[in-house]
Length: 88
Image (cartoon, rainbow, N blue to C red; front, side, top):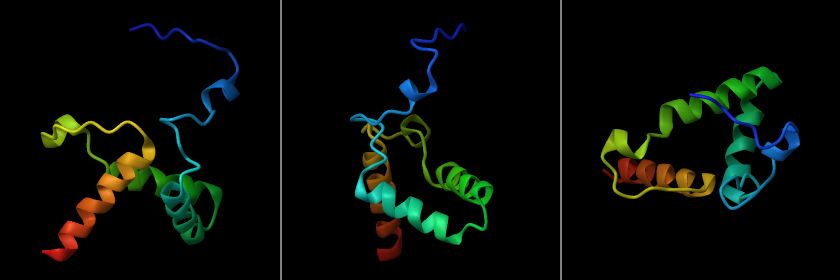
């Protein structure tokens, strides 16, 4: 597989849009919570990675028909699942 870059500028890949919505209140709240627990920038990055690794499943891995696009949609689905687990 060959990766073809649309741009050589890293900032072009870090822009907010309707999929990369890290300015959403739920994403900010999660990032703040993880950051407050971290002792360093590395700890924060590691905890964010581990949160995604341990809590976010690919739709096909869990036989889910619904496909989420935006980061906030994914986080909402994870939180709804966590709340259901608490109820039961």
